[in-house]
Image (cartoon, rainbow, N blue to C red):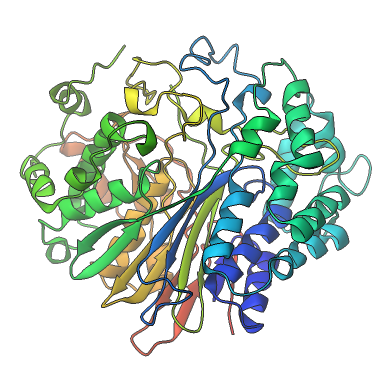
Length: 546
């Protein structure tokens, strides 16, 4: 089973499984296909995290779950305050925001360590999709039209993604053909990761960054590309109601935050109160508030400082945090911050434009993968002659060291830019298992909301026994410590108005309007061993299995 935002990409992964590939093979094929069919976030010019669970039997020499960390890094010329003077009126240039892409190295590392089929076979579906084209759906058509409307300074973007009819917008059913991307993918298929990180493609990347779309200021070089390495890391592991919950470690904050929140909530009998009771929602928000404060204070690239993962994910620590939750009133984010020594001054948020997919093979080996370009279509820089977009991921570093304010802009030390450093992420590819057997594969896009989307899905399945379709469809909420407000999907407001009003009475501030939250393409394994794949209906997507 493969579930992703794109039907052709899900089909590409499923076909690899049919041909005898394992979950990692299918994940590689799906990821490359998404770089063609979902240019908004699928990519070879960005980065992410892949969590691999071997299943009950173990596969490809893998005894325990691992994470492939292919998060982008800061170029060698990056400095801590390189974006400190930027503001809404004078934003950083797109080229200055490009981090060293990690996707191709990450997929190659996963394949080399745990794959089964030949590399060129896995890239081939993406080559065909780029060369021959595919029909865009309504969501992609709308995204392309919106991007083209703001692409005035990016001629290569306008040329690459021009609608097939001059003067007319993209509509569902139009065919997107990307011959230059096809040629780049053919090189990667033939020569592996070296074709991306050295030689003509690397020179084209560095040249595009140097010349830029507008404004100048790019610092990424060919040497940065040649030096990039993906890493194999142990996942963050937690226990909730007898289930093992695995998530990505720092530099992702996702695994730590989800495990910390589950540990806090395990102190309460949520099932007794009910999924939509004011008390359950209040406790969820208070757990979110505390985990996101810890995210700001402690989390960053572990290669650049000590990150206390064991302490943050311990049951004892969570019990102490749970004891500080007052069921009769909302906590103050600013007071909690003061107790942690964080000074809040009187705005940086991660973009929601990421994508997640889930895979499981016939032997129960599972892959949960989330990757991104940062904003929709990254910085809109298309590499000249190569047909792919670059990320603008440097914006995930804390832009002004020492400056934290109530709007959500964070300036705490662990996530300040430095040469070769990985920026903090909220990506949270997650696998839940019991007795070594996978029971749930999930994750989501959504910037900082990713973490709370995953929390909602996991709680819905493990705590409230929802079928996966209901667990994914259920309305979501989000709190990220600062700003001190609750974001709620409209369905939660409409479906549970009494609970929403009760939260207000407890002192919670609820945002006036909140968009849809996340895009959780997930897989559940039933007790009879059958797989259930669910594409999130919040946007397009497809489950493909056999």
